Image (cartoon, rainbow, N blue to C red; front, side):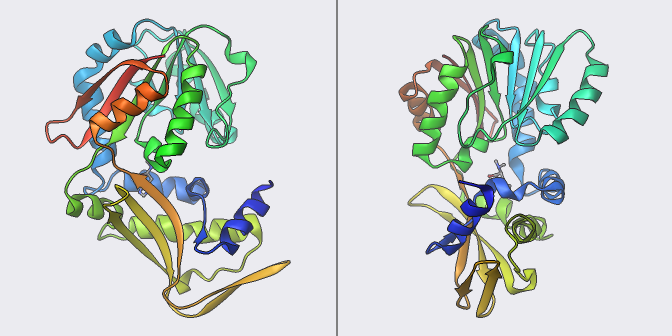
Length: 302
Ligand code: AVI
């Protein structure tokens, strides 16, 4: 299915949905970077603390694999901090936009001339199958940031099974956000500055460009809450008034207060995530947490 057809079918569904991968146009990526600076958005900061404190133990648990495959690499900063402790000789940066990766990789190559670098443009939310040029040596797959939380548990399991095969006998290093008090979670996804609201509403601009829709952003507000039954933060866009969105061959009416579901961000219990890794075929999962027990980094063998 084409991107346009996929978007319009989600929009026509009841309830309407838009996949979270469409948050990340140029502005959306900058807004996400701003989110990671917010005091309320503890995830990025907490994960960085865990890496800084436990990187030697992680390196020992992962074992030696000269190739590091960075899934959702972006500006490549998180992986670059691990190059020396993991003795990386080959770095493969994977992201949906090869264009953005090229710039990051050029800068990184200057700082690390001895490391062979490769950029791969791939939408791995559809299928994680790395191209032949990555080779067949055992690799460490690196998936930080709790992006795994943006998959449902079934999708996460399918993704981890593919990741297991793609390790070629190597290992996985993955960041996972954990269950914690609801007020902490909800503040992280509905900050008082309104950056997360802008990130969510910017999706409609991106959609207007990608699918030719005519959303008026002023008609929509950001909604985020913790759904305890599903153990996930849900983000939605809620219509402020009755409104009709049109595109070349169709339209969708929204009643006031109707919502478009834009993202789930699952919060795991560490024992459940360890069990998920084992179900996906990984062995000896180990994890490290921050002092508050808010975030975990797992290492496991394929
Ligand atoms: C990328 N992902 C892990 C973020 C999250 O926390 O689920 C995306 C995000 N959505 C709102 N704020 C940040």
